Length: 72
Image 1 (cartoon, rainbow, N blue to C red):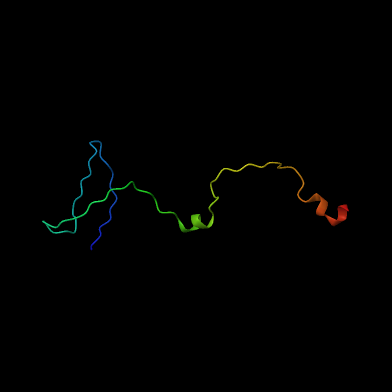
Image 2: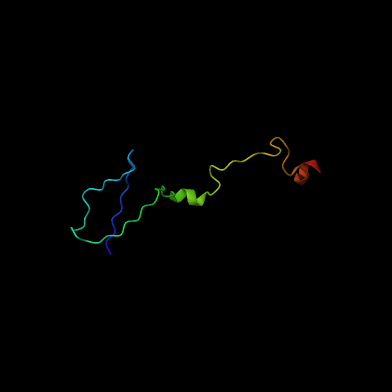
């Protein structure tokens, strides 16, 4: 089965015009239309929290203050 992928923009009249298809006249084809979604970049899958909202609960508080040897 030969597959041909392309990206098109819907016109104001809600139409798509496809020219230069690599099929012969009379060939039966299957047409599937779905909304375009950009491919996830490789590095984005390594950092799933990138771009997510975050907040600091106590941004100026001590971190493990009771663990410091010099303070004991």
